[in-house]
Image (cartoon, rainbow over all chains, first blue to last red):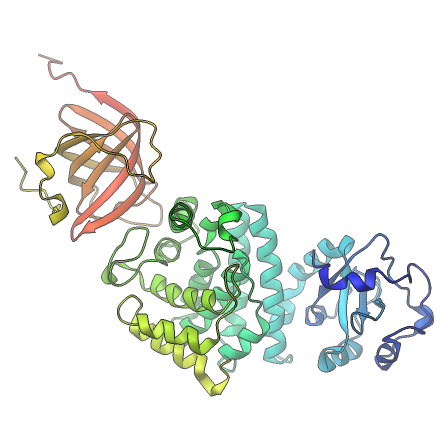
Length: 363
Length: 129
């Protein structure tokens, strides 16, 4: 649970009583229309708070979960919306627009929040009245949430099912020509969890496939392939995947098994096609035959696997890893361009570079 | 004697393929439960069970056996064989069934496939005489 940053709040002594607005952060909370007398402070004796993104509440339905708000680490979180009431859209909009307040749910109700999210995310994504940035943020949250749950289960059926349900949503939002890669990067998280990486690769590949002119149906399939491309990593010891230092030869060989492990897990399925399987099996193959697991050359690598290879490397370079910090986009692009035409498909690298650099939004 | 149907192209690293014999030296990274013997011969291979999403043009192949142990066999094929495919191999009055577990390209028209044997039988050549 994400409790590290909330410890100062938990140490305050305002547990389980009516909050009188006399402590830090109350002015800010008052600005957002909180009625102090009616808002209970969360009982931090039994609960820890988990931060959530306000955009995930835009479905305008009753969440069934108590939502808390605070104005910062020294502000006591108070009830923003009780579980029996619909979220008040105007107040939420103000919170989102000003970005001052943070919203939380209790650790006890986090599972219920995840279930709410899974039930309502499509309502938010298809709402054309919401700005594309908002929908992209929701997408990012939902992706992480749903993939976290399904990847942690280790159940291939669940992972494929959730990937298929997410795939269409990703294409729907990111097939929009107004979304910029740089804007997308800002709302995505960049840690090194396998599901975060898979979610980000899927978002990038949706945009890339759209730009390259793949049909919507093909885009959906490609995105699902990207969501499961690193499935084999779930079979690799986390101590190796998260090792902060240099990997030894054994560890490198263990990691290099992941395309084959993922492929063998999925190979007998009837609900994945050849291209999707090749994205899993061939995303570390290189045009010059120096890749793995088979070391095939350019003409044998499936075009979808070539797409996956480019965005996979870009995502890995621009995300935090146990052994290094995230790389700036320009540096990551220069690495891709160095391999262009030799190990990576030149056309794909050129199109992706153009997309990342579009409208000077690069960081 | 190599048959005319053989499409495997041996890379230069295997130019002495048919001259080699004896036990294979395990590499540092291998963890094998039984020793491998270099058995260099031609064989016929049938893909008995392919993968649902991957169609094959051919299912009968002329291949080369590279080495064999009690539990596994290494085969050279001119085409990529996919992990999880089930194969039937016939060679020197013996037959085996195995599941492909890995495949590595050694050169143009040469893929080394490792497979786990789950059935092995020596065919009695006098049977029926």
